[in-house]
Length: 240
Image (cartoon, rainbow, N blue to C red; front, side, top):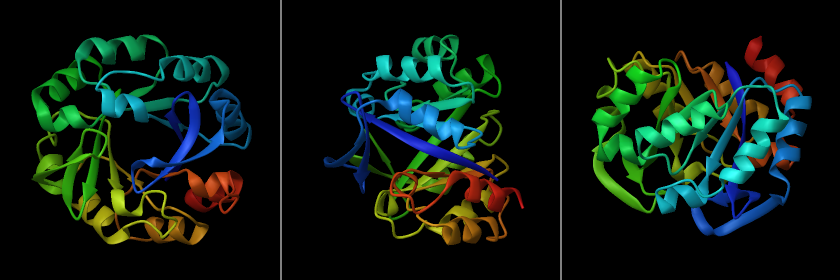
C-alpha cells in the first residue's frame, strides 16, 4: 500500500476542510510547494492534490500553485478538482502530472472518463466521494441518487488507473476511515482503490491494510500536518 499525503488548495493556500465544508477550512501553509517538498523529503512516494476552488468552479483555479509544486518535486503527483473535459486532462498531463482524478464528470459524463482513460492509459483515476453511501458531486455540494458501487462498476472495463474513495463524513474529522465500506468497494471491483477520509493514525492505516481488501493505498492530510502520522512510520507500516 502507498501513503498519499494530501495537499488541498484553496485560494492558493494549503488547507484542510472539515467534512468538505469550504467555510470550515484550516490553513496549514501559505506555501503549498514548500509543503509538497517537505512531504517528499520525509519519504513519500506520491502526492495527492485537490483544487478545492476548482471543484466548485468546474475549472482549474489553483493552477499556479499546482504548477509550482510540479516544478519543485520529483515524486509522481495526482490532482483532482475542476477537471471536466479532455482538453483540461491533456493540459495537466502535459505539465507533468502523473494522474488526473475525474469526479463530478464521472457522474455527469461517464463516456468522457472512458475516452480520457483510452487516450491517456494509466493516467486517469476516478474520484468517488460518498455521503451515506450515495455519490456526491460539485465539490460535495450535491448528493446524487447513485450508489458508490453502481458508479464504480461503470468503469470496470474502462482502463482507469484507480478509484479514490472518500467518505465525506469522515474527511478532516480525525475519526478514522470507513474501513468496511472501503474494503467492500475494493473487493467488489477490479480497479485499484485508494482510501480517503478520516485517516488519522497508524492504527487507521493498519486497519485498512488488514481489512482483507487489496487496497492500493490511503490518503491522509490533517493527521500529517498535526504530527499524528509520520511519513516514515506510515510507509514502513504499509510496506511491511
